[in-house]
Length: 338
Image (cartoon, rainbow, N blue to C red; front, side, top):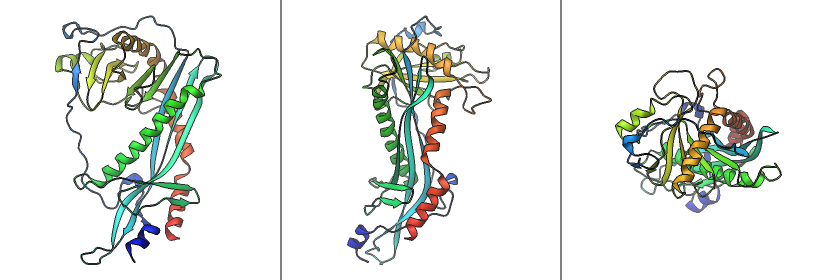
């Protein structure tokens, strides 16, 4: 079969393993590197004066908009490639078929928490240059071709490509949220947008916060990092500036929770770096009012209290909208056989 024929009609085979348990062919796992963030701690207080900051009296926002996304791999497939020019042997490249979705929950007076916007997609993620869209009875998996990187684990490379597309969809959901808020009786400029995860890509949006639930790296100097463990419920750290591949204001906040590990219930919040310091501090004060209200309970959520109640509800609804994974896997197998 010629390369032209391969480009016109993509052949693939579905891996028999449940994607939940990885692939039947695994490569080495990716490791997490040390932080190279540049931190400027003297934004709100001088480092020598750092101490836990108690909540202050601030006005309630007109509405709180929570943005989040979910992803699910339905199948790992193998895309046939043109035979090797060296020995004519057949060749195949692993790829992912996945569904992903993003949306917004609105919490505003008189309506409680309700779904505001949703966006969903299906995608084929691969490095195969001959990849094309995969139509199935359950929808079309749009081809997303990622440049191959011989130094990167293929599974990690494809997972990163999927995460990048999900991030783009979350940015779209965040941008559309305020348009969808029209007609809710919320005064213009009074809402607060909370993105579940880093604020990267959304820093252009006004009154926006990023909420990071887990901590893999100690960004602060040791003495300031140790202070975070002394925070009481609803207390926060002073605001500081941090820069990695992008800059932002940040602070730590402890949500109400059962006493336990030193960092139990601690989240990191982010807002844009290019806003005035006074505005960043005002957002930090506002976060102390808003976030504890929506903290989850241990008996309801295994990620309590950091996985906020509206976010958990949004995740459940988005997963439901992804469709039945058994039916989707079957649809892919039928498409492969045809």
